Structures are given as structure tokens and as C-alpha cells.
Image (tube, rainbow, N blue to C red; front, side, top):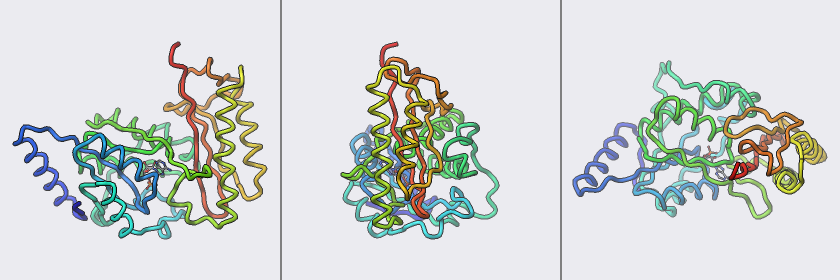
Length: 300
Ligand code: AMP
């Protein structure tokens, strides 16, 4: 495994690796797995899928300052590069890219990428500018690495939708591969931010997966059920947890993210698209997100 902090050196190594393979008559497939580090099983699942499907796996670890709001947790975001490198090594990563903020954003930086509409809803409504930071850094990483495939977790379902739109609109030559949410045995979705939770908050946070799975079961099994009915039950269930402060609980089309009207049926026989049920809830100072995606009926 090789580690890089410098963009130019990484590019040269990638070029050489591609060239060496080409001289042997082989076109290698390169995967990129972008992360902010403090790696856990969720990240590991992306790395494993990338490893299985490609010849070379590039992991980036960069806590991207421009996707954090002024009152968010950029400074205290958990970091543990040594542990991250051990996990990367275990998962068979070839190249790790760990740039500094100065390397990624030499000053002045005046250019960014903004995806319209999809970034104004859900997390975009409560975190203005967040997705502009995400698309800008992911766009830069895609340009630097030029991977054939890039792997993202459905844990950040809106991020998947926004990045897929960016790739489509700006003709990035890459396949975006969404990966399922990895959960703890008790249901809590893995997140680097889970370390912020007190024991009591962590216990309370189980209400998210419990309520979302109940919502999914209801939508999948109850005939004629509407989005409004599922939403009301979900809000009640999360609202009943005293430590939970709801940021949003919503049902939207996926990946279009248009809200589904309360009266619309979302039972299996009536789904016109995949449907995202997404929540963002604070426990103390920690804001957690989670979701489930209801898949569209296969035959229309
Ligand atoms: P982060 O380091 O939190 O920015 O996450 C890096 C990537 O890992 C993103 O594509 C996330 O969606 C993905 N990821 C984070 N947590 C999970 C999880 N529990 N299951 C699957 N993917 C995840």
C-alpha cells in the first residue's frame, strides 16, 4: 500500500500504473472510495466492494472544511489516521490519498461545483452550502484520480443523488456505485459521528432504525397505505423518544428527491419511483441521519 499527500505525486503514480498495465496489454479498472476518515465497517464495506470489482483501489481521506457550516463540527470531527491506514491495509487498498487542506484548496480558490434543486431539500435545507462543498471536493477527487468507478454509501442517500446528477450534468466519465447501509447489530447505522454519543444518547438513537424499519415494513405490507400515514407514524415514533430532537422526517422520490404528497399511496403496487424515507435527528449536540429506500415495483 502506498500513501500520498501530494496531488502531483499521486497523479504520476496513477499514470505510471496505468501505463505499465497497458504495456502488458491490460486496461486496469480503478476505483475511488472518498471518505473523511475515522473509518468503520461502513467504509470497509465500500472498500471491499471496490476491491472485488476493480484492479486498483484508491481510498481518499480528507475532512473537507468547505462542506461544514460555520457552527458545525469541522474542528472536532474525529480523526485517527494511523488506525485508518491499518484498516485500509487490511482491506487491500492500493493507494491512500491524505491531502492537507492547503493541498486541496490553495488560496485563493475561486471555483466550485453546485448542483441545483436536489441540494435545497432534506439535509441541504438544514445545512446551507453543505452539498456545494461535497460536489466541489468530489469533483476535484474525480479529476485527480480519474477512476472508472466511485463508491458511495446509501447512508448519505441525498449525497448519492446529488453526485449522480453532477456526474451526469458535467459528463464525468465514471460509474457511481451506491452501497447499502451497514448497521450495528442493534440497528444503529454506523457513522464516524457515533463516537460523540453518550451511552444514553446511543441507546436513544436506536429509535431511528427501529422507526424506519417499521415504516418500511408498513409501506411494504399494508395495502393502499399513503405517505402521510407512514410519515405520521414515523414522526410519532421518533417524537416519543425524549432525547430525540427532529430536524426532518420526510418522504421523497429517489433519486429525484421531489417530496411525495401526503395523499399519495406508497404501497408496493402504487410506487411510481423508488421512495426515500429519510430522517435527521439530533441527540444532544450530535446530528444523526438515517434512511430506508423502498424499491419500485419491477413490472409496470
Ligand atoms: P464519510 O467518511 O462519513 O464522509 O463517509 C464516506 C463514505 O462512506 C460515504 O459514501 C458514506 O455514505 C459511506 N458510509 C458512511 N457510513 C456508512 C454506513 N454505515 N454504511 C455504508 N456506507 C457508509
